[in-house]
Amino acid sequence: MALRSTRFMVTFRHPFSLPGDAARLPAGDYEILVEEELLQGLTFEAYRRTASFLVAGSAKTGRTEMYPVSEHDLQGMLTRDQAPDADGIALLTESR
Image 1: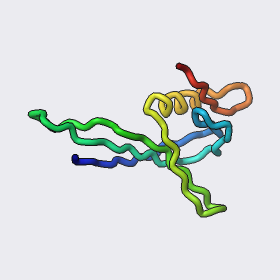
Image 2 (image 1 turned 90 degrees about the vertical axis):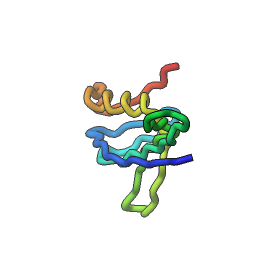
Image 3 (image 1 turned 60 degrees about the vertical axis):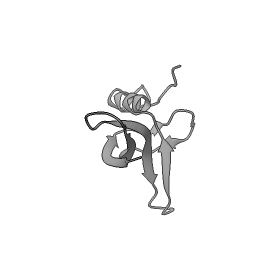
């Protein structure tokens, strides 16, 4: 099975929370890591996303953490960051 990884940066202008985690991450630039697998048996090349992670590093501790995040949740967090609530904090509420 052929795998590929893609990395890109996103910028949060306000502190934010990840789904299912009460802790807030500070505003700033974050790397997004997307892992995909090659779909076999097609007449053209196509990939399926298998995982996405928000990579958060701390200069104070020198520690890097990878938080799993869905494409839907990431888009929701970025949308909320553009339109913060009254406290100026972008929050993600889980919807199921």
